[in-house]
Length: 359
Ligand code: NAD
Image (cartoon, rainbow, N blue to C red; front, side, top):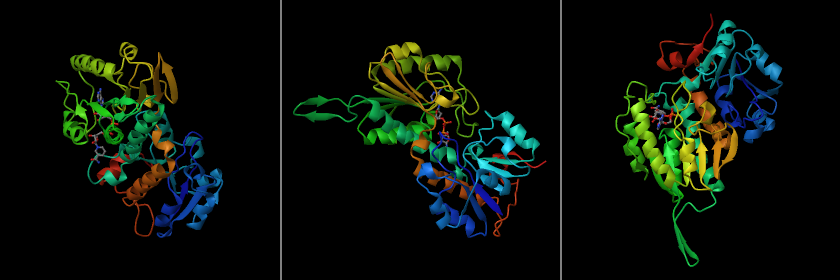
């Protein structure tokens, strides 16, 4: 079998598999083709791939010869030959038309963002491995932009109070953000619609702000669900109160397949002090503030607002390493010991991730 690794777009620094991970495939007699310079932005050169047994080819050849293609983002369906299998993060709820085009070409798509949030699937969970990085980098980015210290200092030249951070959404990214912010000495308050995360937040040293009357999310596979108007009103009041005191805000609130909820209104932004920083990780689905611009950093009445849902790409080596490991773990479910593809749709992970298959 032939597996191809493609170069991502110019704004994406990650690669779907690093050279050090190629051997897992070549040991199974799988031939690995790597598009020229695919790993360059993740500090993996063509020579590194060749040393590990891969062959460097043009994009056309990588697309033409592969039975299985690894990528991170969708590739134009016109570029993929009929019957190919693709594994990546394809966001089917936002890319329905592309999925339809692939389906009509009998292209099989495994979208790892559709993986069930179960214990067995944890080692293949790309959303988690990448969100963990995003949470960490969000705090570092905020520290870099914030014109004051994060930790408290008592010095001969005067005292510095600790930065007050507000984190909205305590999923994988939010929890890592709490841990990182606490390590840097910030004081952290946290909102989430899922009361179940309260203990985790507290164990990381954050203060959990409770809003009564959250909608039951127990049947949504751990994800958030939309809230009632009454809940939203109560939450807004409490957020408005916390945000006035916050120096740094990190927002991560997302609802799968839907536009992100606007939790920070213009009124709230007006009450923040100048020099405050907001890192909005929900920017790609509309953002959690009323003014977020995706992939842009703006200054809104003295408040710095960063809209970036792809911070994992700013740490491309480790992000690629974890992504590649997730992919290889997933591959074990669909590969025979001889390195051929054998799909078992009785497997809940194979079934849930397969968003298009051979007709
Ligand atoms: P996510 O990226 O979908 O959302 C981020 C957070 O925002 C979530 O905690 C969500 O509850 C919160 N949120 C959504 N709307 C909100 C609102 N209006 N106000 C405040 N908060 C809001 O979440 P995620 O990081 O993908 O994690 C989702 C869940 O899945 C978590 O419970 C996580 O622990 C769980 N999980 C389980 C596994 C596993 O078992 N394999 C793996 C990863 C995550």
